[in-house]
Image (cartoon, rainbow, N blue to C red; front, side, top):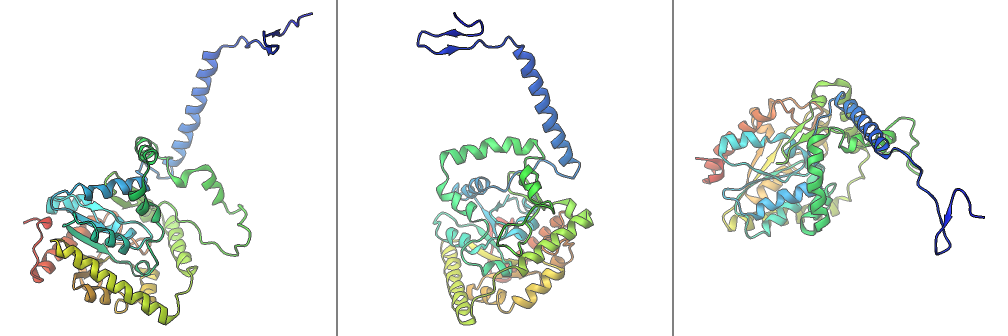
Length: 366
């Protein structure tokens, strides 16, 4: 006898009837629940000072690097680490010189591989500002943000499209950030178990900046205004430095540094030979971080040899009061409220120093 709740298909299978449900109403409830959940999560993070911000993604760096390939007239390019990324005000530079710079600095990274790639780029004839952070120019290869550097030469169509699909969400949602991911939040809780075999693990860097599509990055105002958050960021910097591996033996370190000087000299000469110019910039640090740099990597051991080997103009914040008279809340990056003033001071100093060296660059205006 046939079942009253099912019927047989010609192939012998059982066809179960679809329940008679109000599917439009179910769909509407799902939309309401999803909207309420995302809205609550968004309000939660906005209440903690988060705002929509462009991710400093490998895709964004690769897109920005291609502006150099476009051979824009009077190109000015910044390379370096996070100090160059956070401390230089691109809009102020544009106002003062008429040129919107290309920002290629990468946080936690060595700028010298980027210098080398631009030296090999026969089309680059602009003004290159190289930010020098002493601990980072000594690391092998590029370091922390190698993913961005590599993306430029190997980006796939899916990666290209993924970046462009992500940008509208980044501009819309404050919670669309690595710091707000649920598992990131859970992992950072004090009760989360440490990974096996690790007696000590430096805490991950927290959100400290906001960025736009031109890679204009500002130190997050929360770092400036919230003493508890600022203290945490300082502690993380100290943990990173103190947990770093020891330097190589002195003889090996000397050989590595000699090679660094020679490679850098050749790269600077290659850019100059086709009409470009290279300037080195040492931006300010403060507090414990500055004391560490002065003790472990003094300027006479790192900065002075690089400038001397290349014969380039070098501007060190210790030599110019206008570059030191800024607030550095967490010891390593200039407050977003002072970066415009710092940038204007740097432009004025750069014009004077280049003129003294008999160099005129159209990128700095008339």
